[in-house]
Length: 449
Ligand SMILES: *Cc1c(COP(=O)(O)O)cnc(C)c1O
Image (cartoon, rainbow, N blue to C red; front, side, top):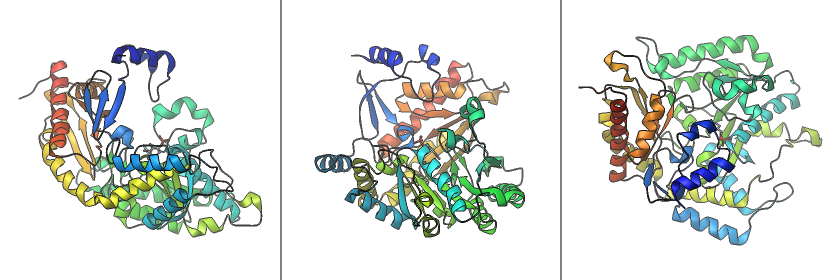
């Protein structure tokens, strides 16, 4: 079996996500046979540095021996048991640990990120209903926000390409301005831009707080909007406004959680506590689908009642799956065993140095980093000619040819690598990203200097 023949079978039988399948006529999917550490291997021995942590889920590299051992042990004990009416130690231990890490509790489990979004939104609206204020049932999200793509989650996902076809099905949330630091006006700092965006939230809440249940945010970085980083001032102002107007605050930490932004959770950089936190992606170290929502005692207590219908009756078949919970426990153990947050701070310095030539490149704008996320926008029109459509996509394909997996979002390229790079693989990532940019420019007949 070679790459081309497996790709062909895939195109006949698999409907790939986030993909216009017709584009695969010219760009077939790349079959991956195995992965180890930061490396992905195709069927023909080609290898690629996983610069995006397999769509932001992997933390400690592929096939980590500690996570593998935990999964094998769990498989010999208990594969699955429904969590309604039953419990098991992996889910209990994981919930205790997530509670200690977040300062929230009452962990409720789903499978994917989008189901966590739905759970948090439903819990908030149901809380207001249980407390005698059923009119508080509207949601607020940020411009460019991304919280998943099921029909409920699309209500708060402000990305036209993902939402437009389903607009008639979706009960749209209100959209308030994004605090994206790139939107700072001349003379404005990132914190000024954040406070100006918070002013937009305040205006909306002043008018509509009586009907509003909850504001959902991606703290510190709106990843799917193109790694739009904002100042923590936004989160402090949003917390204060939500308190003043009696509106819940959801921190969607599905992408930003588990050290990705430098702290264990991104909202901790603002010193605030949300009413709900959504977790997924890195939760299992990138091995199995699992998501969780944690909340406050106040919210939990509003559901605790003799009346069944006042309970939170939501469920998924695989809620709290023991294997996934064991993988999550092993992942949390790795944070302690490897002192991951401190090591990442050092690794980030190494990568900053490696990325410096790319950040200075004349076609690069807004080179930025938060924690273990690097992003840069492409403006290849430096020679006075307008940028070409699809440049970022061609850039990502050149990167793959240089042995580095990067992904484009609009005009943005980003790297979100696993936490286990060493000096050599860090250099490979950065030099591949730079070489691919120059190769893409050369293809387009745009060389500089
Ligand atoms: C990926 C993501 C989701 C959706 O998670 P899925 O597992 O893809 O459903 C929700 N919110 C944020 C911030 C995400 O990055």
